[in-house]
Length: 164
Image 1: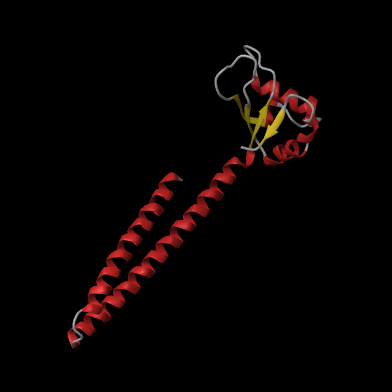
Image 2: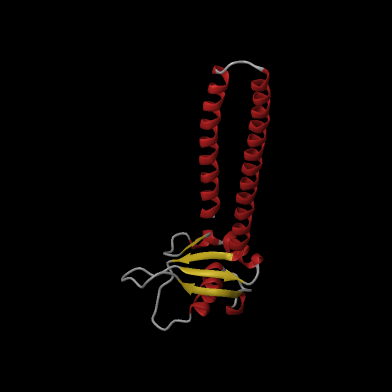
């Protein structure tokens, strides 16, 4: 998305530069003599100015449309993901089995098994005293929603559940 914002910045910079140049041209145009060819030139200038402004308006609308679409795509992508924190970390652990058992025992969700979890791994580097959070991608969104609805059951425990 950074590229889209760079395009928007560039477009705004171009618009500012063009406005400055058009203002200088208008000042010169008003200061010159008022003969017939100057009127034609003035008319051409006004037509060009209107064209440029309509082009910038169209570009801004397109960029805003792209931003909205990118946000929707990213939201859809994150729809099946959750971050589970505070789960005790052990060496040689099977994270998928561990998460399935935590979800079943602590949240009372019976239909969660290791096969319900498409992706399940710890994030970051190992640090002393603090367990790394676990990124979970569910096979289906309803299971994720059920876990999200029951996250209040983790209150008072060292575990927490977050959206990404």
